[in-house]
Amino acid sequence: MRYDKLVRDKISEILRLKGISHSTHIAKDGEYFEKLKEKYIEEIKEFFKDNTKEELADILEVTCAFRDYLKYDNELLEALAKKEEYKDDKFLRRIKTFIEEPNAKKLGSVLGMIYSACDYIEISKEELESARQIKEETKGKFLEKIILEKVNE
Image 1 (cartoon, one colour):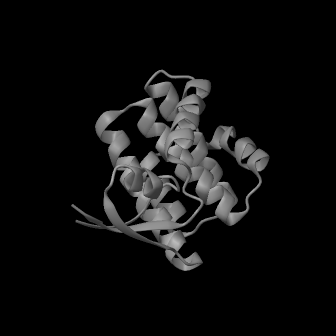
Image 2 (image 1 turned 90 degrees about the horizontal axis):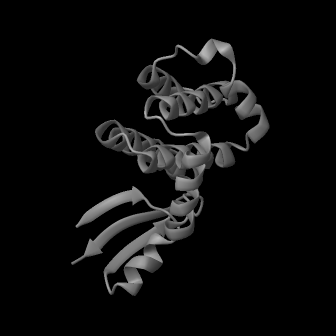
């Protein structure tokens, strides 16, 4: 089965422990950025389908991977996320704009929309962060640039 997608840094080890033969490679910077964008779209679709805090936490995790890759200051992004001007933004339109032209202001607006989605599904930012931490502890982060190429079943 072919995958060719970005996976969290502990997935390869999890597959190995389960005896699942697979192949991976470490993405170069340009490939990593493209795979992050693909992962973002994948996670957004999953959230739209399920509307769970775990799926929203996955979106937050990819947002954090973008933040770290682009070396944006977290406090700046938090401040931008809380700005009044982002309260009525449309989620998909802003994501598309972000993907085409990344910058701190747009990433901050995405973070603001993630917080708005928390309100929509009636969870707190603390619950969201807790769900993200659980995923990080069990499956890792997206920072290792690991691309799962193939799983041999």
